Length: 128
Image (cartoon, rainbow, N blue to C red; front, side, top):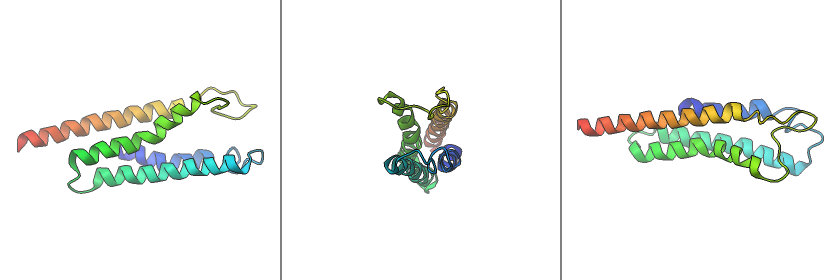
């Protein structure tokens, strides 16, 4: 989950802090506002994930909070496709939901990391 948090912190700036998004002259200022808000949300959620994962003594509650904060950005990205008038890319590019190449594997990695960490917590608890 730590690796997905770092990817979530850096990825939006790699893909969006350029002429296709934040410097796109055809985007109105309010669209850029929401793009900036999304990039910042990724950073904040990543920090929350890392704090909850690595805070000493956080245990199951910290792990649950980390899994939630790690997933929110990606689940909300998927939900955006259900709103009217949205697309994964701007024309004239073909919209092939390219975000799915990242979103689905990252959510799978978060789920796998969560399951393994829960298993580890249960093993430690039984050993006591």
